[in-house]
Length: 167
Image (cartoon, rainbow, N blue to C red):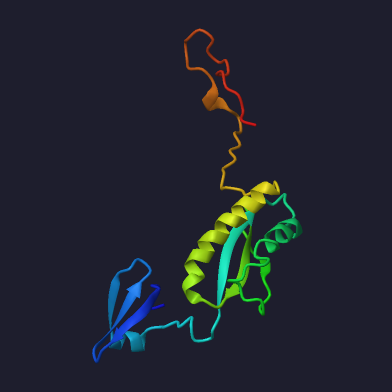
């Protein structure tokens, strides 16, 4: 990965390096940039960690979510068995307890497809287990609802307008 872009080296010349990106584009990087920027080689160590982030509602149990999600990668031969699969809490967000599923794979070309596949699996597993996946929402409190009263001089002036609170 160079400059936030994944790519596979296709050709190295005296002046530049050509990478094929995930979008099947050719990215030409001057070698001076390759030397002066952070370059990540995920194939060097033989395994790469895949992270699948998700969130659950504050009312839900992190242990229950962890238990459901840890079952997903069982017996998937693409996942490196010599590294433990983990589900950890990473953040207490404004609408959710944020967690991440972490596992390692040996074939680094599967990183993006497996992340997409397991994102959907996590969604379906949480839904099936009836563990709420929250979304940001806004709760509005109105003090002295004067703005909801009818306008001057009309019949029924001063009456509260016809409205019902939500849920």
